Length: 397
View 1 (cartoon, rainbow, N blue to C red):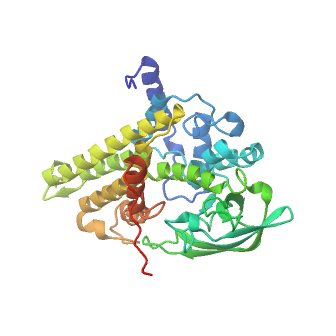
View 2: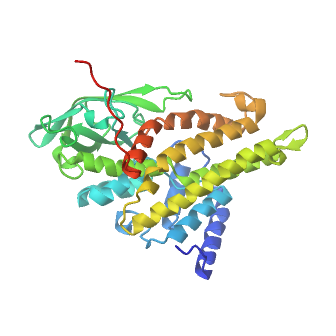
View 3: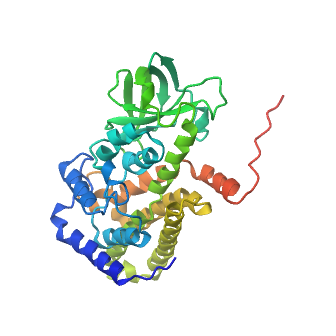
């Protein structure tokens, strides 16, 4: 790929930067609720100018531009350099929308994609269960046919945003007699459907970011299945691919890196800026190298996607690399703040509203969530490097 910028690309980069700075009064703050009017207005403005949902067809609520890898890269760079709030990225926008565009029916696309892109519809993901986490295909939540509907019964766990969500995309077992990977269906339905109970779970941040979700005779039309009944494992893996990309977003990592650079310029030890300390600068440069390697890998994945080719190893490492790198970046920020980095909650001396402390704890959870680091390493070894599967322990007779 030729990464040289043409005059057109240089002009485009300046245009995006100017737009973001000219509209600084419209930037929503990071602490606003998901459905806050200022966040929704910012997302709408970004879509209208092609800085969000850029290549999604206009008939589904996107901007409808032709794919251009360099322009996509320049947009991300402009957000990182200016510190502007990036476009919304969540389970609906980043995971469900590309899945529906690839495998959903026309009715499903028309009903859900545009509202999701605008942030009007919030989604949660019903995948993991108490007995089916890393071995997701062992899920037990059942869906039995009753006329033109399914009756869903079972339980999901670690369901992010379930307490705020309007809709859920959920894996259910529709054929108990089929092999475990073949009896699963992928179905979408409203979270206010009778028979759904949500119980919040408090995580290490001290907030209920996860939930248990219980289904008791939840009635859902069969037509809500994405793809065909029994093909849910294939659809689910498409969603998981997009989830790994969201959790390992290199643009978010670069924005964090730039924020840490500014933090280290402001913080001092004995009158010396941290950015001038060889020890701290060495840690920063090591992480900077990883961030830029991650950015290059992201372009490799994007190129493969535009060519309709599998991303291979480049796609397999995204989640593992991204989540561990984000945790290390937050750790550096906390160390840079010294003893103030230990503060939490509503302490009057806390910096940046405790955002770095929150990220450190939340990102530690993401090393487990969305596929544990250990599982990701097995996938990389087996699918990427062609190594033999890890032997299962023998069960005594």
